[in-house]
Length: 236
Image (cartoon, rainbow, N blue to C red):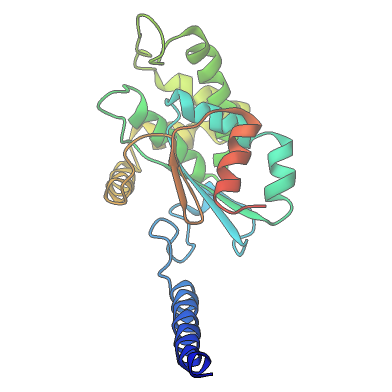
């Protein structure tokens, strides 16, 4: 009987400790600061974000038109299965952040970023991206140019502005306005500032993806690859 009486206070104390731990865990979840990449959910460039702004889940993709692995992400996320399952359903807000962290290694990065921002000016960013990225892939990446995993790596030569205006014309943009925008580097300062922001947030390679509180650098490719990334971030 004495033994049982001695056990009760210990058991009560244990319950109190467990309750305190659970309470602290719940408090930390409720009061957890927002993901440093997502912040308050405001896109860096509004025209580079698609999906419901109030979606439960957010995918942020730091990207570059002249990054070969980024083109694999573009291929996977431009397919109807991705759009139907995640975007059209309202599950996901998908944001691109075009940055130039590869500019010292990739000759066309800065001009590609200008083209992306200039397309966003005309609210044609996604259409432009879906057109030019497959072109770059077919013209260069698929031929082993601009990629690293070949015996003798070759750089994509510095492209003329006409290469970029071809896609602008194909999707019905105002080509003259687009050409002037790219040629005059209208967004040079904005791109530099956003690249600096990305570097300060720890972006150190591309593609670099953030799904809610999950972060990954690199991409295995295909629908299975993007589904795995989203699943790891808690997207059902």
